[in-house]
Image 1 (cartoon, rainbow, N blue to C red):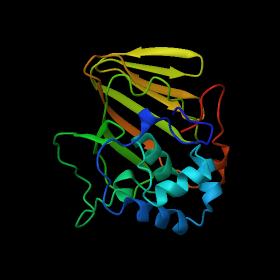
Image 2: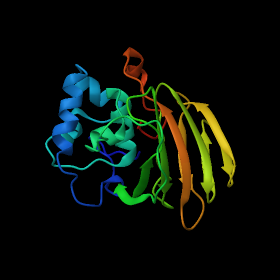
Image 3: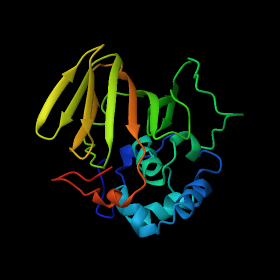
Length: 211
């Protein structure tokens, strides 16, 4: 994501809607249960400790890319950070509409069971929000274009994906996702959840900061 000199996301990456109840406290609880200091956790997701502290005290709201990074670092799912719970684990996830604008303009819907080594999401990326976002982190990502057109940048190569196309890549490769359709792009998105010393390999690449 685009960052300021303090490591905070640029204004366009901020959560636009109202604060999710209890989010700040859950962010802190997950970090502490993962036995990570503020400094180490922030480094793993490419944020400054001061910015992560503001997230944990509710003075800032995270975007979906930031939530994905934090979930990966803490070995949990975005739904867990947002306080979404299920009565009991169910391997079947029923279809439904994607919630719009949950985080930084992104819409998403859980597409897999919680508590697994991978997180599956249906994601809607609005046009224009991801043009400056470059991410680098341990693990793998797989995506499938359900609707619209996607521009996927992997290192120095740019790939244009249409409906029905998919991509599977090592997420230590600097990568950037952007919608090319005027109405945005809808994806099925799967990524590994990592909570290991390898997470400290999350380093900025070139002119853009990490996710």
